[in-house]
Figure 1: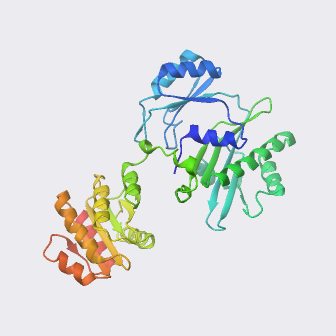
Figure 2: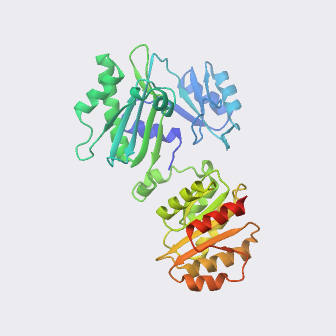
Figure 3: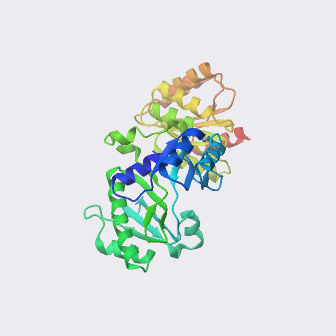
Length: 376
């Protein structure tokens, strides 16, 4: 679950990270008032859950309160990667002499938290990794012991030769680790962490992604979800108990089980097609889930055909077949549906689908090839 920068800043501040004062506003006049309260100069930042705001013109510096209002008006209503800006953050601007990157993720290889630091802050870390990987230091942290002093010294010395700066940064790294663990984050990032000409250090940007699986115990964090900034299909899928990720292809996929879903997408790519989504209906064979899944996929105008690939264990193939028949009635489907059902009650499912316009497939490979042909 991505959260807005204003909420990430609040979490950082709670755990002792130095965050400049800021206000969230929805119109130009409130932007002017916020700038007066904070003190100019200020930065006006679009609040949208996508990267590249600065490159899109969604981050602007304002030297005066009147200018803050003008800049806020220009950003509000702007379209950034398909999302309309409805709120802006007015934050105190600081002078910058150095910029660092600091971030944390979960490292799948070690299955532990991983902290990354780089002296090349202020630009996309992916670009740094591509062009100058030697500038990124990665340190795996054992949660049984927490972040160790020797790890802090190693990272701070990689960022700055100034002992006073390094000492301050060490405290910030320790605080970032505490915040990351406390909110069950899968990502926490400061880019950039800046040093001012007078030696102050500020986290002038904040990004946190919270693990959805932890929301049952992160009661406060659960309320930070901004559904207006999410892909509508992903919201509907979550409400229906489905796992869904939108992609850019033309072949919609309905599969049960994450492993089979990944294998299905791999096979589509292998034979020259492009999957339009990852969609896992899970172990349930409820016809309602099948209908919900098709509705979500049909939101994507790029979808030319839908491939249903079900391996029935707990999931019953006949229930999926009934869901497909009902979806056909309710939705008036006018695109091809390729269906491969195998496992529990597959013979009964074939009887249910016999004589329909659905395109049958005996194997996954056959289903994928037929879906690619239908899409073209």
